Image 1: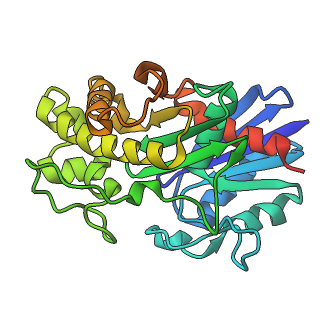
Image 2: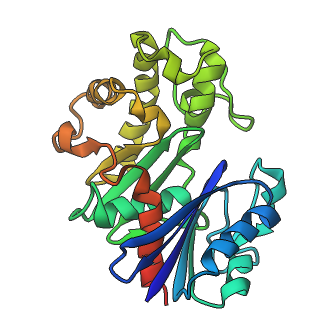
Length: 285
């Protein structure tokens, strides 16, 4: 048995193949350009193998409602070449094998749930903070969805009293993604986050926003584990600042597990998404 995985990001696609033990045999990174150019390279890679099934975790928004006429499409993405593109259909047509379909962050959540930081838990929430902010949750072994997939990055949060930034989200301005994703940090300060590593105030403000979101997710979903990934979380002091702010905002109302065990980083690191895709492929019938 051979499984294929496509972790489709806004800047690059990571593709991998594994055996039935989910041991990765080969992987490749492909720049995200147009559907035609990108998928040609994806198919050139997969054509070397006989795949039994494929798992896709895609940037979005995407249609995950199996009853919808546009199920499997990338929908209202700012990447105009991909807008209203039948991604799932293109892969199914090429290979004629079962294909699992979800968001990139749902795939990462599932990878961490089965093989990473949330292994053994009944539920978890994964939030990635990078060029955008997105979240996925797994409850009782199933990725959480309704008429669509969660858009946790567009949660509205209150502004820090020392922050007059208006936000970078074209839809909501000061939603979580609009004020706390990597591009928002750069737009606010005129520097990339990596150049602001020693500015404690920057990360205190960042933690203020992220902790608000985590408190809300905790109150709504009560996940057994919260996992924070993405490039912004590579700032070494940020995790501890988030935990401090979380404690302050929760104000003792909910008795969560120890925060050192409750709010963590991905055990699978940058492999969470690709592992989630492989897991979904192995379970797709």
